[in-house]
Length: 168
Picture 1: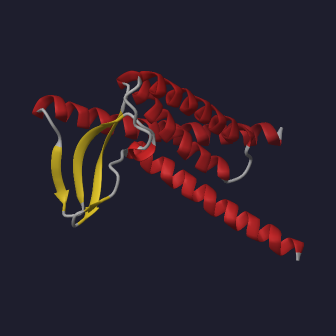
Picture 2: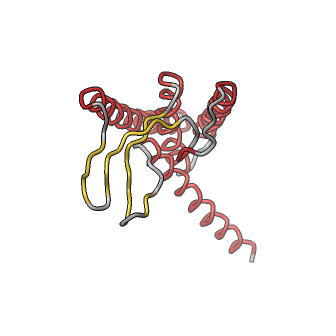
C-alpha cells in the first residue's frame, strides 16, 4: 500500500514538472515565433548581457550536428526519440531524487522534440553574451535540460563519493 502511494506521488510530481517545463517552453517559443511573423524578424536588446534573437536550429544541442541532408536530420531525430524514451524509462525506474532531474531533462527534450517534428527545426532565441563573446543561442527547454543534466552529474559525484567513504 505504501509503495502504491509513493509511486502515485512520484507520478504526480514528475507529471507536474514535465507539464510546467513543456508549457513554459511552448509559450515562450510561440510568443517569439509570433513576434517574427509580425515584425519579419526578432532581434531584441534586453540588457547588455542578453538579447532575444530567433534562429532555427536543425542540429542538436546548441546547433551541433546541423546538416542539410533530410536523411541525416531524420536519423538524428530518431536518435533523439530513442534517448527521450530512455529518459522516460529512467523516470519510471528511479526511486530517488534523480527522478526530479530526469523529469527536467524529459520536459525539455519533449518540447524540443515536438518542434523538430512540427517545424523540422527548433527555435532558439536566448542570446547571452559578454562584450563580443556570445554563448550558443538556446531556448527554455535547453535551460531545463542543462539544469537536469548538471544536477544528475552532481548527484552522481556526491553519491559515488559517499559510496567510496562507506567502503573505507
